[in-house]
Length: 547
Image 1: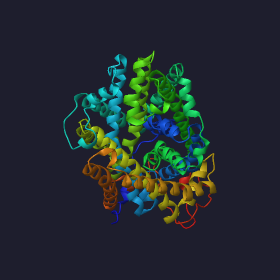
Image 2: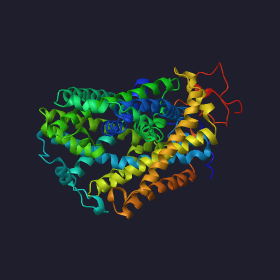
Image 3: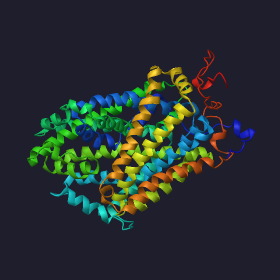
Image 4: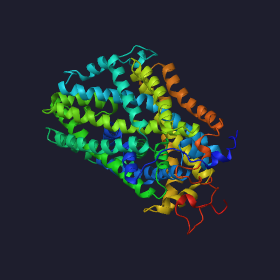
């Protein structure tokens, strides 16, 4: 189904989408998106379980051969076609629009449950002052969330007031930041929160290093198990960590790049974002394992008995550490405050993908687009996740949104760009026009071979593990996993295809010039690079030899 032909008046209008006023603002916003909860509570445990210090090698290889190449790919598509995920993919090639909507829908799922974790972290920041969990952090967390567990998980609307109030406050904060716009809201909040996050976590690391047993924790974290490098699973884990932590392939970096000025060094910016994210992950490993070393010594157990990740690390293990540490209240405020800051900047970036798509589709200004997206999201988020089913629902949605949403979308988009459209020559020339770090055959090889291979293997391993496991995922009822896991993941793809078939209104941003008043670059020509043009001022003015 083709979109209606825009009127001449619409074709000469400029899209009012907002923009970053400089490269620095973009870099802070991009780092704010990449640095999230996974850096703090996922990376340390993944590294420990996959060779300790030896894991750094496959991790860096994964960063250089897949993470940064995919980051460049997102930047190139968003920057060249100047739109949200659906608009940019449609302009890349008409039929690839479904990929953009798939990415938007993944962000919808993540946004509604991500706010719950932020609400918990906000409350636990306050609880840290008086160590409200007492001597039983696990029991307290169960009482606080009143969460249904395992086989008891079901659809229930028994609300938890403490969680509900915090979630409402989180969404109010998100709406305020988003309503302020791309630069005054997203960029300025990141410019404040990211330095504050780094300062807080550095202080947390320094304090943790002074705890008894901290050195033993660091030794466990960094001690290399070189034999692990021969295990293919370790390499898959390294690539998986990079995919999840860099915010690639689900519309965020593509959307942010669309707000950049045309004369921007995309590759140099990508390197800064990639290495900043990885540096923070290693810092998180130092802080977390210093604290876990203390916990192991205090309890008289081995390190491997206290290592955990995710919700268990944040809301059970760390409160236990805080209860026993000499400066526990300070550690608690710093740790949970860091979770709030890291999670908030990530949630803002996730919601922006949805707002940008809504804004482009209907040609709306910022405030109506923000309210049109955030109010329904907030209602669904609070309505579903401030209940006793919030935790199991989060658990299942997160598992399938990540492993069958982000990974599958990354695999499909890479195959489409590389093998079906064969658009890498166009994207490479766009990146190299102003890029200080030129992309070449290594970039092409990474996207054509390494990224799809690892993504495909990850998808196969995840599926095999789930299908061959004894019982259901986390012992949840089969219908619960089927409905909110498998059917949700499949439903996102079906909905994305349907949305891509709906015509864009004549008033949409699709039919307008970009925010600078310039025409949008034509779609990529199969296998064709962009012709050199000495008169071109920006990469957007370059055209294929067959355009």
